[in-house]
Image 1: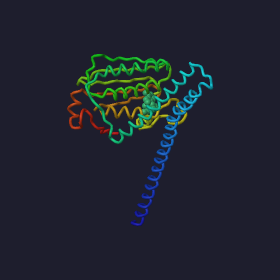
Image 2: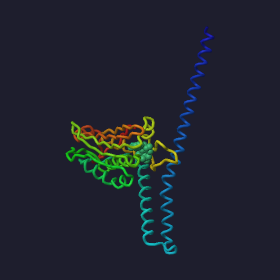
Image 3: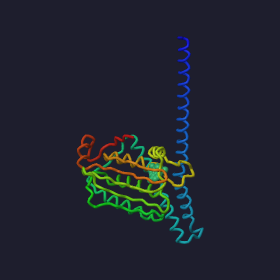
Image 4: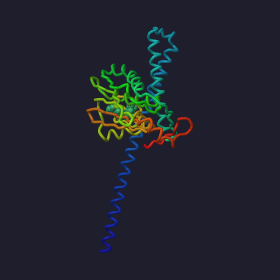
Length: 284
Ligand SMILES: Nc1ncnc2c1ncn2[C@@H]1O[C@H](COP(=O)(O)OP(=O)(O)O)[C@@H](O)[C@H]1O
Ligand SMILES: [Mg+2]
């Protein structure tokens, strides 16, 4: 009997080892795939604008020899400017996420009006939405309570969310930005679209830094996969919450809750360092 149980014990152990080896292999295969998709995608994101800058600036240097008409010169200069701007934003995102991950990201809070920030962000996306044939509407009351926050970081957050709403909604779709006060003096902003949406698993990928639902080279939209994780961390730093509700094929609603300014000053007292800055304690 004891011999039988020893044999059984061995068999169970061997079985467990096999399962552990199998899941470790799957995990490392997945990590490798994500890594190679990441490298392929990032080198594409960095090289494409750089190639444009190098190529068109060379043409401009030789404009005399090539007899390029004035309007084309302006066009090429615009392309160089756009590409450089894009490159800068990718690099800034990479620097931001690495600061956030090392807990060194700081925000500079003061009393701010979120409705002004939202109107500014929406206005800066109207042209892109129009070009993409997406109806971008708002419902932002001007009676929202002021909150304590970092205006430039909230701009960055809403810009990331709006850019996704416009980028992942096919022509003919709609995106809407609403804001409302909460009963305790805070506010909720919702950025809602009826675009391609995400399944639960896809949403998990989307929330990881550099994660994109379709990470292959043939993706239909560009980006570094940092917009959502950065937005979430920035809202965490404001003592708020960012929630995503998405359904594949139906659309996505991102809600951002910002706490009342009284709540923030009370709970942040202990985290504050010099001035109004405090250090990230990003949870994820
Ligand atoms: N509003 C949205 N609708 C559908 N998919 C979205 C939306 N927002 C984000 N996603 C998915 O999440 C991924 C990650 O988004 P993000 O972090 O902003 O990176 P990026 O925009 O650079 O791809 C996107 O590639 C996309 O697949
Ligand atoms: Mg994005």
